[in-house]
Image 1 (cartoon, rainbow, N blue to C red):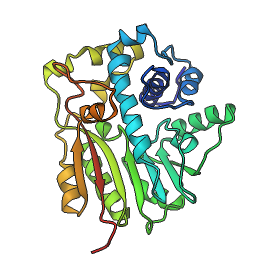
Image 2: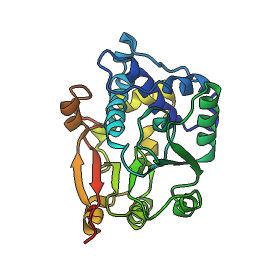
Image 3: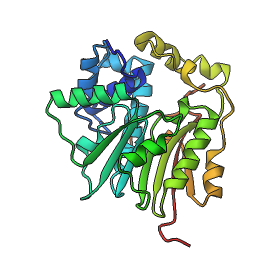
Image 4: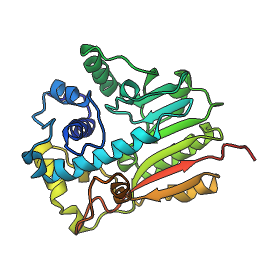
Length: 281
């Protein structure tokens, strides 16, 4: 059984495992399949015709694969990388990192413990200095990060991959302000948002109903129904250079990934990339 491991983290791991075996694979996460198998859930971990017949694995799974590829290309480079809501992310174990880099993985203890056990069982070793941080991102997580060795004086890459969809508006705004406070010039940020509460037609999408039927995850119940804050404007006002993208922009860039459909749950998602001026004013 999945136990204390977040089912949404397992869902993304399964998508990454499938992505690695696609004929037109966008990302290679050789560890993802081990999490799914260790959790004991009956989900696919490789590409097949059955996978392509499921709105979940063929569409949402492909979305996660595309997002994985984007961030695999985006992340390495800074002296520090902070994964906010790290889940079952294995980039510290599989990407090339510059010398003296430091990766901090923030999440709940049970998820981090499960990841550690699975990776230890298969003999995986990190390729970079890696520090897991057990904390609740709805609270004062910055104190835990600083206690873990984070250096506020260094440029940092911040990643909130899929996190903000599940946070309240107040928690999102607090997270952005904390990131800004801890960021030196030359820092970068990726986060994912939904533009608004979805229409009844979108909420009735087979992507959501299939996800619930095949995994037991009710995504609609997890998403916050409150109006979303304008974090793009907030960061811009704080001096960040911000660009906003759809996943379809990256489908075009990489030549594979989801394309728009009617009443599309993916159409309201935005991938936001922000950076601070590397030269102080």
